[in-house]
Image (cartoon, rainbow, N blue to C red; front, side, top):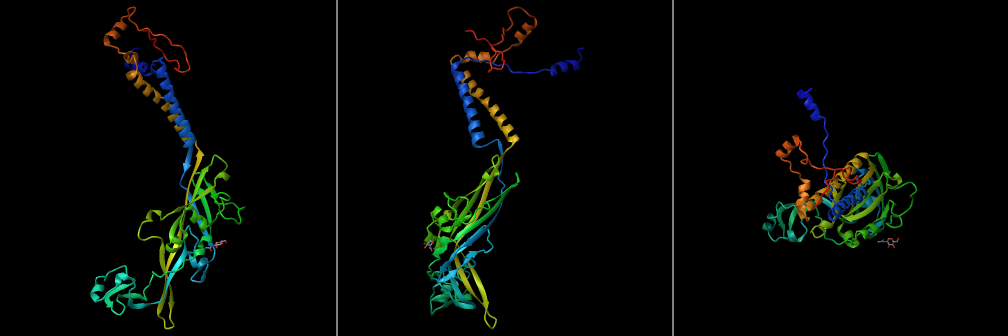
Length: 397
Ligand SMILES: *[C@@H]1O[C@H](CO)[C@@H](O)[C@H](O)[C@H]1NC(C)=O
């Protein structure tokens, strides 16, 4: 029965286990336990309790936002309602409240003189250098209108003068914004809305009514430290952030939004072109069929409703993976202790000899032909819960 197949089988059907050296030293023992304690507290405290590694997260939130603004203001002694000051009117998540409009009435196609100091002229040559300017209100013809000292343009005339001072609509701080937000976490098929049916007439307040979906514009501006007069004059951008942080291991009713506000144009505060404005025109026809228009330059506060969210729920796979990672990492303590044991401690050479056993060919040959006294003396160590039945060498000094 000594065929090659048989000897292969006997060598294949074996089990290897590593031999351990139990070092009975207080200093290394304390370091070993300290390192293990650090690793355990990192995993328990940070990975499991703080980062919640036992849960799986869904950040791909699906969201839909509808807004509605209410309030009345006065601009140039004209009462403005929602249809006058909200753009676009569909009630989207991004909308503008117009606070100031500079209107240029009765513009017809034709030629007229440009407005503004940069287009002043005394001869035609002063205007030909502006020929392809895109800063003008129309196409520069290259002709200087000497009677008013300004270059002539071709386009909608008269040209707009956007430097006129207009008192902005101050009442916009008292407007209210109603936000309807419905979300879904596709991974867990959880659908939520930002308020329930019990909420009727309310105004959101961080302390007393944090779940009310109706916000007063002035409260939002106070929270982002925005100067109301500057904002009304120049326009600006405000972000309304709705954040959903849901732990679906708890009751789903605890999955509620939190609101916060940001000044979105803050990075551009020191730039020349501050604020936010846009132009739009309304077109009319005269009795004989000629088009004319009134041009509106609107300064507006642009609101941007942004929805973010994370839902978490217990899952077996990340739990198992992280438990295994934690258990494996506890073994990291050995690396540190080995470094200290074999390099820094008194008697490091002796420890090294016990750990790394050198076996020469001569010793092996001697052990094949047994002679008493040449065998290594190995005895069973005390069974303890810590060294899991490892064989301990008795160190005799
Ligand atoms: C806003 O409303 C309050 C109370 O209703 C009023 O006293 C205040 O004058 C209003 N603000 C503006 C700018 O109209």
